[in-house]
Length: 478
Ligand code: GLN
Image (cartoon, rainbow, N blue to C red):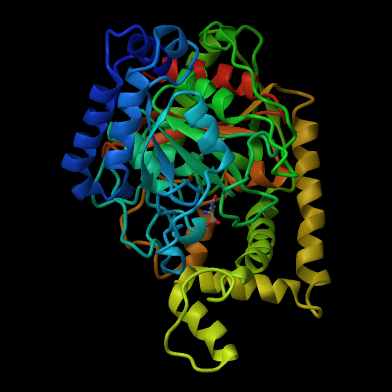
């Protein structure tokens, strides 16, 4: 179910020329949220008044101004770890329950400059740690395609908001798959850009060397348009490469002669369910029918990707989350009388179990006695994984892979076994470790009717190639 029965570019154009009105479309998004979100819980806060005021102001602009704005009047939802001025930004955590940022993240500013309307903030795993949106301190989100199933995570709220048609687009963040995996489970498209493409200024840090913000939408063309809008050069993030993405209509065709699709043998072996393998194989046949070629490639070190990722991301998280001590940032306990107790009590009350687990693992792998055995080794393996991809891309343009080993699992199925949950990230974490872009697009459904996505990955800065493959896949899967 899509919010518009046209692309964002077309809707935006219609609003600019007056055949649709921004207030009507924003009003429609707000009523859909009002009607449907009680059953899904995709939103943590809704910007009712702010959004309508903004839409009215947009409708009052001169037509010549309206036409310059690439996202004119488009209602957008934002993951709740991305700072929005005067709108709560909780990160799905009690620690930040009362945080109202005094500034906008660069991506939010960029969306506003492009004419978008921020309609609300979406639910997520606490501090983006998780694969199911079950670790939010404010309740779970349900999958719109099957209410007893998880929507994926950690950007489960954003994916569910788009897939259910409450909004045409959303932003998520992806540290190890948190955009791609929920999009695969809910049935929409989501992109993790090249590391450094999109500014992280105003994104609450989880693991700084892996985090990227990216767009979620129903159509791959919308993804390109949104990426162009948010990938502005930004001096406020020292890891921003200042390489804005330029969209190009030539990416969007099913004519894909000589597109070389690499199939890593490590990704199609053991552990992948038949339910996921089947639609991917069918899609591949159709892509070959449109001129694509397939190449067998190998990524010998990806078997270590999950272990490497969970060492690096926990190490960085333990450091990034040290600031939440009830004094510098975050929830302050009223139960403590001494300073030391204040720190521990505030963290004890403010953080949930998964966040505490990660801080403990991260502190352990960085401790002086274990640093060489864990963190340093993981940093080295990370380089080997990045090299595996470089090598593979000498033989192909894009790599095709599953997004997750199975369709969305049931709510509660993996909460008591964190390791099982971590293992479901097997196909997504490598793109973050290597800093390359990855996209998930719907490829089919399970016999139960649950969506199944396909992932494409490309070389750094080659989002264009990625969108080309993804658009063809989208058209051929319909
Ligand atoms: N599921 C992964 C984790 O739990 C990825 C999270 C993310 O990308 N933010 O760390």
